Image (cartoon, rainbow, N blue to C red; front, side, top):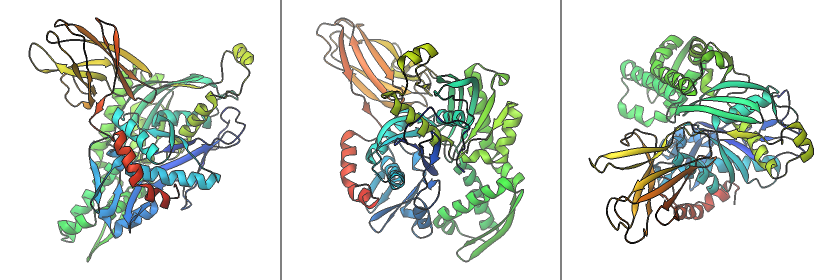
Length: 538
């Protein structure tokens, strides 16, 4: 069901052609702002509001969405699901006909399908988009998502955190924005976003022309599919004990059984007990599962979200009475166990008024409108000065991970980390760290950039390394070199170095350990041209 807002966003003169895309682990949505200023979902070619985030390689072409899911029953080894979890890593997630496909390319096929659906809706070429990412995504994953958009032929105007996008949609839904696009009422809200494959918690303050994120945390590998996996494990045990099914039979049908597990989970959302009847080759499993058993099987997963919830509240330096609403986002928040836990834990108003499946795409579309209007603001400057606002919504997100560098402690030779930009710093952000040369006449300094982890670099994500080269001759040992690290609004990292003795600035290119290089992106654009032509995106 579409949102029916109580007030529209600002005063739009035309339909916005910048689409908002919720690129989900299991399902994706594309939305836009209509001529009345309301967010609307674009119906896909199958007549649905959501598109399964699945890709299948069949007969020399690529299938995306529902058709790809159908291929699970025939050629499961040629179907890719849940690519979002692997994006921005060094892993290649599927090999088909001798070709290794990275997650960025798989995601680009899904984005290409969404773009085609948008173009069918508008009857014209669509290029501008805002794509959402989990708040807990690290920098390589954010950059890789933007690369996937570029591979799909999109001009990615921004990536926005999913909880922040949901807060924007909430503001529109509840009429909190007046006709000038200003929040008339200040609120502090917490967003609990449990999607198909990722989990985020954010605390935000909505006031006037701004949305300020105070604290975030999450898990980019925790979501509804993990609840499905618990049911799948139970189904597997039932097949083995009741039907004597073999491991090979179960392995071959894993994709189909996982879909059955998902259906059971959905049924248990509204029913206390569900009949189970599944055929596996010559075996037929007939049994029941009730909600109490399901809750027991998945209690450890719910506990992980509870831990994160408490952690974010602590990091925000707020107490539950100061949180006015808890906004539930993501299809997995429909599970009764989630709602019950949040009621006990928060003692705040639980708000499910915005569609859990579409809120994020709606917020991305609103943000796309904001970005589009920044260059052509529809207001009179004198009136703006008198009213105390300029009509431009400001969104300030924070970084979900410490950003720092990993070096070597000179006395011990052990790894030693230094935090340069702490977690939950408002973006954009910049800070400086001073390093010293280890020996006389040193010609270069090599620095490793990391996100997260501890001061020894444990559990950190290595962003990459960079070198400060061509240091001047004759520098004594201990000569200072200042390293400047920056996060932009999208959470993308830039680096710069200054040799203090000379004042010389060096713009640095980080040699990244994960993601695609510029040459690889160009290569995949050429190699996948035929696929995008088949998707109607030549």
